[in-house]
Amino acid sequence: MHGKKNRGFTLAETILTAGLTGIMIMLIQPLVSSVSRSRNFLTTIHSRQLKVSRLPELIRNAFESAGFGDAEYAGKEHLRSGRGVYEVTSSTIKTLDEVFFAGRKEKGNFLFLELPTAWNDTVASRFVAFRVLDGNLSLLHYSITGGVLKQTREDVILTNVEGKASMDDKLFSLSLHYKKGSDQFAMETLVPVGGSNEN
Image (cartoon, rainbow, N blue to C red; front, side):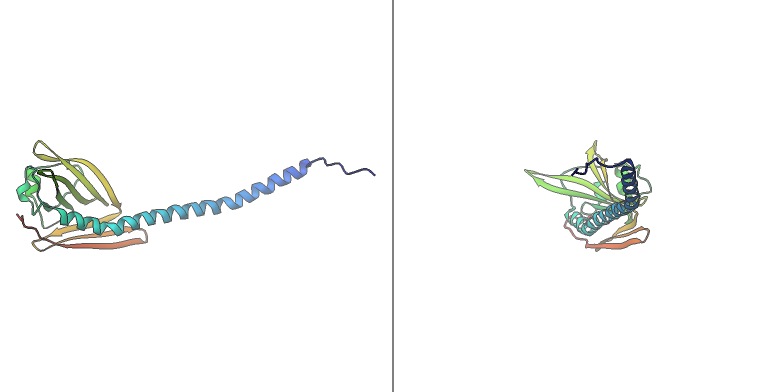
């Protein structure tokens, strides 16, 4: 008896297998793309929710930590315990001087904070501002150069947002409204105004 010879695949079988594999890939590819888009969307939403959930705490802590350190700069006398609310219409304002600080308002889109830190025998300060402008909530960082504050860095915290800050003798509030498509939320942070070195 002769055994069957194993010759491998015929050309027709190879072409049929390649064709079926190609069809399967074409059918699966949209599903894989959809899953990838969904994952990216959910990752973005989760990241934004983490930022948003910590935002009131971040702003409240910064506001409550504000005060005056040993640093001298033009316009300091216009602040209330190292705090001031201003209205800005341009992101090109990179220097804060006497004229800027003299324009303090009760309501605006820019919250300036001096954050003092005791170190050895001095009280050093960091200078930051929260600004809502052109749909972005940004955290701005400043340093003293020649007696005025110059912006050194800008971190965008949240996009697609509008809002206003207000501060009187008793209360500070920051109201934000986020909207992108059907995804939207509103947030308000309220902090009592206090401090022994009010101006």
